[in-house]
Image (cartoon, rainbow, N blue to C red; front, side, top):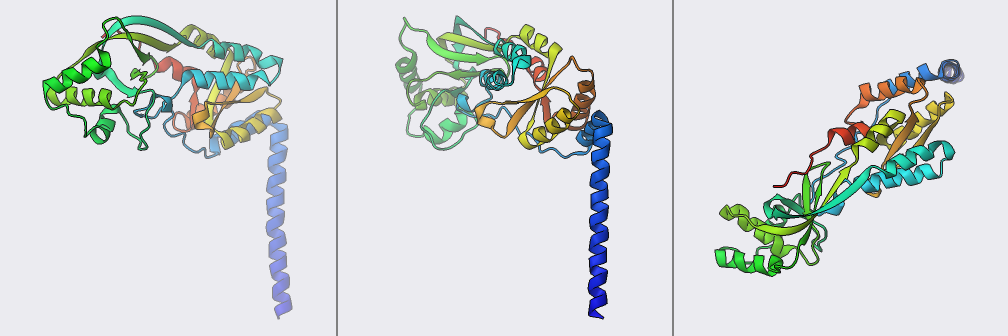
Length: 299
């Protein structure tokens, strides 16, 4: 009796394995006969992990998304990918630009600093000030005037600030721990005051002309690394040129899937990615740069 049961179990296992083998063989056949169709179907049905916020809020500017770091990292990856990707690498290096003006700036616009030794993470400088600046007296106007003179009292100097056009954020390039600066901001909020300082203001922005040229020639799809590897394998199996390019160092879990627009077949694959996974699990980089623009206004 036990012998017959064991034979039945073996038969069931063999039948299951046969079905699995048959399905695998059938999928491989479809992939070989209709590689683009199979890739589109796979992309449409596959789960892709969400990106999470690529430009988080923080009282430290170096924790924000850096357009420069992102484009430079991707360009460096493409440098090693052969001659056919050098044009894309060159275009990526043309995107990030800066210009500098001497302007008067309200400190109430500033939400971050360049450096701090604080261990805790804060979303902005006011949150930082509420915890870290309790020992700095700012209750009276005399306190406010004294600290503002200590920080910005040199009439011959313009102080270094930065404005980023892709997210509308200002930050202060501080040389010392930012407690006094944060205390001033807290006083401004609590007392309804403001302080305007002479600023050497660096404007960081994406050159939209370079972005449009890039968009006319390439797709750069930002997504989780594992998903990008799977899609790249299927795209290459269809004999379509593609490459994986690194994103900025803060998000090593993400990569760019880079595809050429000269091959009409890529449009079907990208459309499937966008329709199914945009914008929570995939972002088209050129579109992101074009739609995230807050031009500098002197205020």
